[in-house]
Structures are given as structure tokens and as C-alpha cells.
Length: 363
Ligand code: PEP
Ligand code: MN
Image 1 (cartoon, rainbow, N blue to C red):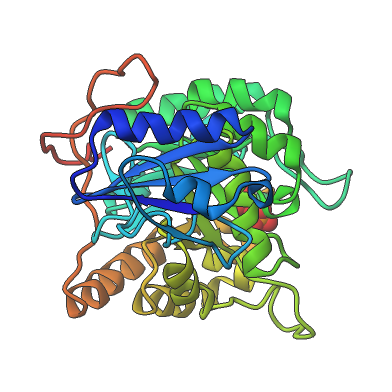
Image 2 (tube, rainbow, N blue to C red):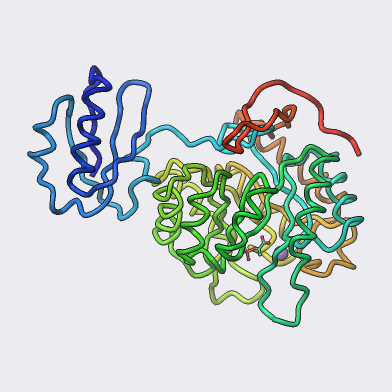
């Protein structure tokens, strides 16, 4: 249930409602809009009568929520969530592009790919140190050593890093190094992992499960937000269908649908969605045209030698061309591709403050 406070409600009245909800065993989440405060009551709301809430000082009205998800719902928060990565924001009008290899395979290849994507205008570096592989015999990633390589690539390029945590135990280590904690498609319904990421002080990129509905995906995001982390970026990466010519089927309609249902930013991974580098550009362009807030794209300095997903990885040259196309599509929509700002000193909560401008280091 959402409790809409009167425009002139005082802080004491807001606290009164919060206390009253907590006394009834409910959690209260506040959304402070420009004009009024909305309080999301989470828990067993059936035991609470609407009239008893309406009787509290400062309450204007109650909106019962039709969706199973609450805190990530547009009803709870009407303005878009903007996730601040210090040097760039996700969910603003600008388009954020995370690019890099599927896996952190080694120092040289990651540093050269990171430099190349930075030169082409990427605003983030992707790369898995911990890799969820279908086969136990495939390359499993470099683990902690891979995180150190990503940190070096960030220091050289200024690009914020997104990398995956596969288990609750890995969350702290990944959160310590990364700017964004990625939760993969295979783990979208790993509830212990969602809750641990919800307790972390870094933003989370939540991929859609390969056989998950949009409601299940938003409920997974709800776990993270309900555990205390409001900074969630959703990532559509294609779903399983009968179509066998592509690795997955990109659900483009999920982009405007999620934007209708939720205030969270949504980006698209055209690489895992298609499985073929030649299809990545067209689907990336379509995703931006459909209103996505950004992209997560696999790029490799030499895809032919990649240890993981080389067939769907763009060369740096093709990635450069894609960035030019994206800029044109963005401009046609009155948007633009995001530019990196100067990295700010870390604040105590691990998130950085935004301001200033500086060019991307060129190598
Ligand atoms: C990835 O982006 O590295 C990845 C493993 O993708 P997904 O979880 O979407 O399969
Ligand atoms: Mn991959």
C-alpha cells in the first residue's frame, strides 16, 4: 500500500505514520517528491485497515498497489531513478554505454580493450572476473586476480567498472572494487544473492533471467531495493524462445514496458541477446530507439582469440562505428551519449559525488 501525505504534511506527521506502520510490523520506505512525501508500506498489509491509516495526521489518501512489486513501481516514485556512478549517471536523458570483454582473460587484453572502448566514447568498462559458465570445462575467469586487472584498467581509463558477483560471499569483494555489481541472468532468482547485493553500498546491474517474465524480473529488483539498495539498473539481455538462429530473443518491448511499470533505468545487452557480432549493432540501435538508457556490449581487442564469447564480441573498430550510430539516434530523440566527468574522491558510503567535466584519457 502507498500512503500519499498531504502537500503541507510536516516531518513530525511523516514520522508519526512511519512509527505507526512499524508498530504494526510493517516496513516503511519513503519517497520524497517535489510536492509531497509518499510512504510505501511493505509487509502483511492485509492486517491493516485503510481507515486506521487515513485517520493518522497528515495522510491525504491511500493507493492500493495492483502490482506485486511496490518499491520499484512507478506508483511509488513517479520520477525516474538516476543511478550516480560518480563520473557518469545511468537513467538520466543521456545514454550510458558499458563495453569490454566477456571475461577478464588477462592483463594486456583487458587494458588494450579498455583503452580502445574509452577512445570510442564508452562510459563504462564491462568484464567478468567471476564467470558463470554453462560447462564446467570452459574458462571460469580469473577470480580475484581479475578484479585487480579491472581496477588497473579503471585507473588508466577513468571508466567505471561493472563486473559480476555469482554468490553472496563474492558480493563484498566485488563491491569493494567495482563501481557496479552485476547479477547475471542465471542468478536473477538467487534470493540470497539479491539480498546480499541489497545490503551492499554500490549500485547493482540486474540482468533479466533467460526464462523470466517482466514481473519476475521486477520482483527480483524489489528484493534488492527492499534490502536497502535503491540503486538498481535493469538489463534486458534476451529470453529463451523457439528461435534457434540467435542465442536468445531480444525482448525490445520490455524496454518501454518496464519504463511504464517502474522508475528504474533499463539498459540492453545486445551481445548475449543475439550471440552474433553482426546482429549486435542493429539490436543496439533498436534498443536506443526504443528508449533504453544505455547498453552493455561485448568488445574484444581480438575477438578471434577470445576465451569466451568471441563470436558475439565487436572489434574496437566496429564498436567505434556503433557509438557514432548511437549518437545519431540519440540526437534524433533529443538525447545524447553520456560523457565521463572527472572522478571525485570517494565519499564514506562508497558512492561518489557528481560534478566537473574532463575528457576521457586517450590511452
Ligand atoms: C555477462 O554479461 O557476462 C553474462 C554472463 O551475461 P548473462 O548473465 O546475461 O548471460
Ligand atoms: Mn559473455
